Amino acid sequence: MSNLRRALATGAAIALAGSLGTASLVAGGGVVASATGSGTYLLLGTAPASFELGGVQLANGNAAGSFRHEVDVQGFHVAFEGTVTCLTMDPVNHRAWIGGVITLNNSTHPSYTTPRTQVGHDIWFRVVDYGEGAAAAADRTSFVGFEGDLDFPSSAAYCAGQPWAAADARTWGFSEGNVQVHD
Image (cartoon, rainbow, N blue to C red; front, side, top):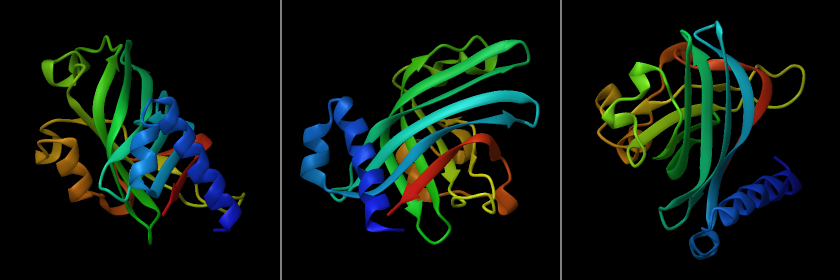
C-alpha cells in the first residue's frame, strides 16, 4: 500500500475516533491498525443488509471507533450501533475482528431483543479486505455476534480468539461498498 493511501486511511480513522470524543486516546496511543468502510450485502443470501465501520487499534492496546449493522429479516427490523473496544487483524490475509459495546439497539426481531443484545453488552463481527479494482473479489463481513456466541464471553475474547471459518463461511460479500484493513 502506498504511504499516501495509508495516511489517508489512518487519517480517516483518527478523524472518526476524534469525532467520537476519543481524540486524546488516539493521540496518546499511536494508531497501529485500522479497519474502515461501509457496504451493502445480502444476509443469508436474501435479506438486504448494510453496515458501516470506522475503527483503530492503538499501540497501547486500546481501540476506538464505531460501527453500525442493519437488516430487515423475517418481517422484523434488526439494527445495532456500537463503540469499538477491540480490533485485531491478520495482515497477511487482510482480516479484522472488531468487538465493542452496544450503544443502540433498534431491533424488533425477538432474537435481538434479549437481555444480552441490549445497550451496554458486548457485540462483535469480522471483515476481510480483498483489495481494490474490478479483478478483486468482493470484500466481506459477518453479521454480529454477542456475549456467549461461539463460547466467547466478551468482545475482548472474540478479538483475541480471531475465529475464521474455512472458505469465508458465515460472511457475506458486498454487492456495493468496500472495507479497508490496514496495519
